[in-house]
Image (cartoon, rainbow, N blue to C red; front, side):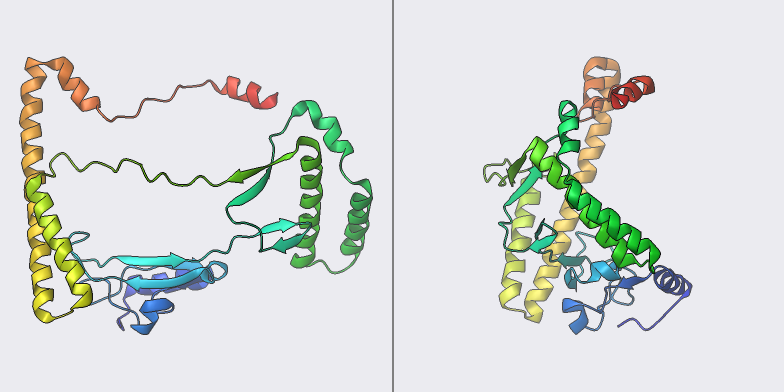
Length: 281
């Protein structure tokens, strides 16, 4: 646990108190049992997860992982797990039994049906809402009454939209298992693959047999893997600089093709007048 509080830490606490924010570190999940694990150089906590009070209920776990030179020179990686319950609102009632893989959505607005949309608004319910609003304004107005009114009014408009334009069920697209994995970096050669394979193999062993000897082997394998990555990356950049320098005079066309490779195409520059006319109509 980090018990030292400097000027930056004091400012962070003032920021959280002034904006009703909460620090997750040491409060939830694995990090709670570890009493706020250190995140930097094994001496201090300077990496945080911060959220609002309303969002805090969705955080199911927070964990500070073991330090790894592959991710940072001094910082330990942190992970936050969120748990969100899916639900739908039907006639102002929350329905948690709805199939989470299917959701109903109103079809797109059709300007030719705007008259039907207005006619399909339930006038009796609208009059009831109007009466409730007048009574609410005469009483003490609070946040819950305002939220309830706008919720009922929104449902009234959505119901009319469904009756006018129709609704459709959207099935979430499953992730393709045949998706081609991202390729390695151009400098990631067989030497890098060998060191990665050896490092991962030892990491898997460490999960089941946490001995001091194996921990040292994992640390040494990680160091070799990191040094191999850095050496090959540096070598590739040096070769690329020499190649660009040579191609600039010998093959200018290929030189610019190489520089522009992977560059996103520039978006068309639309005049503001065209955008205004489009949304106006």
